[in-house]
Length: 193
Image (tube, rainbow, N blue to C red):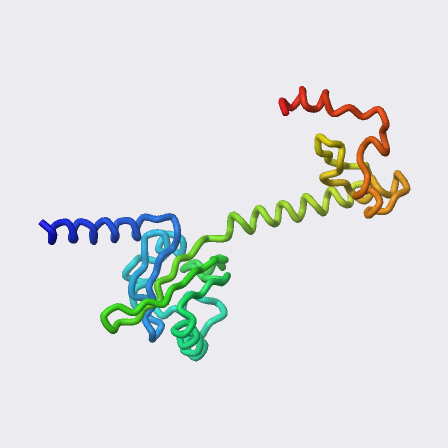
């Protein structure tokens, strides 16, 4: 029957929200967390019972009640909010989160339905990339990466300096300008390109 089908859909929706890999939580106009999913509990180290009833600003390192009230009014007008925030876990770890929030009003009840993505893996990759770039740029040896057409994908400062060119000049050149006998075919065969 229709009631059974709708009940099954309701349970499936609840199951899906509880088990997605992103944080999902609902915040009431007064800042109270009304709903939290499993991922949010695991990420922050709280039980659902501990989180439900907490205030939104209890988890944010840069938030307080007056700021919440101001932001809620902005949110109510704009309907969608997207930004990067820092949450504080139960063990005081600061966790960068990208949140997308939606203002919803259902049968007179207002909530902010917010989805959050843990940015720690992304931040780690960015840090590794930053350190790699710094290391490559500051090496004394010439380092360069080329495309199959012989243009430069990357080169470090030592490459330009040791060959007596500016970075801008090298960016306009190709390997054949430096090494007239350069042949990309062995590279293509080696890397199956």
